[in-house]
Length: 141
Image 1 (cartoon, one colour):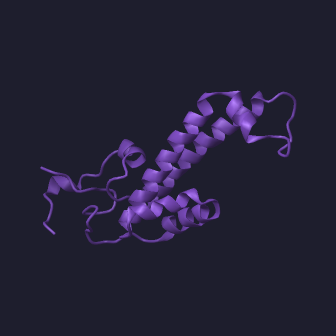
Image 2: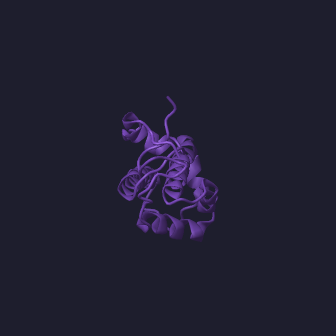
Image 3: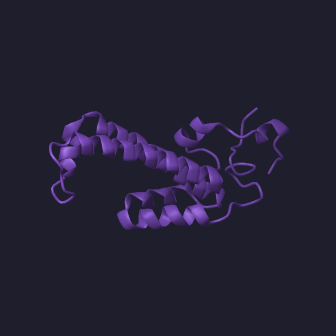
């Protein structure tokens, strides 16, 4: 592979981390981005929980109630799912695997195992076809 110019090693910003599936991302930003996703999801769940009349029990709550409470909740879930997919694709590319393996996050039990394992596996220290270093991607000049 060609050695990229020094300007190609500048780390992209947080919007790249959450929106783009292109490049590589290290373990620390991976966990930080997932913390942001889970905080946003927990805030939405808390708002929904407080909007329910009375004190609902977990057994009485239905997913349909969640969607009917606010029509923006499904949009929020889709956006957060895209963030998660982009992070997993970049993390897989960082460890040298194909981004297509990220489709496994749609399998419930496999998803949790995969998220944890990807957060623990160290990055490839050498450049690979997805970027020169963790938290980067190949840039065209």
